[in-house]
Image (cartoon, rainbow, N blue to C red; front, side):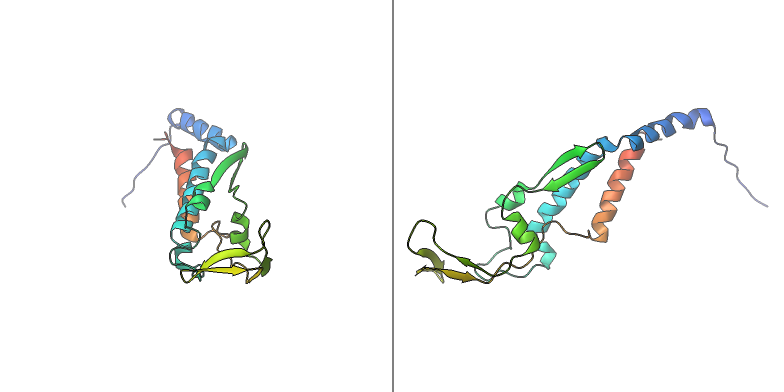
Length: 164
């Protein structure tokens, strides 16, 4: 028979367990790390056009939701309390892209007509029947498994940091 024994010496492991226990009881330290990762994932989602899953653009070439970068840069995180982080955008049209819209009518607010470009030519109209926006959610729910695993690893690394 062959065997190996391990003896746990409580006076050497207790300080490390106490350190992990304190971090678990107050998760506020991991929330900024988690918030930054979630914002990074959202920005990547926009930069890649939903990793190729979003409907293509009809009116221009390029990546959906990434013409000026304003929407992409608008995502931030906020600590709500000691165990909650919120990620979002204050750009009003972010929710339209997250959920999509029904068809709607566009009419001028101050002028008599609208002016826009079609095929490189200026076009005038008194009203436009917009077909609506398809869903192109920058905040994916549920999260893909690979993103969940990244978040789980970050949280675990945070809790075990300094434990030898």
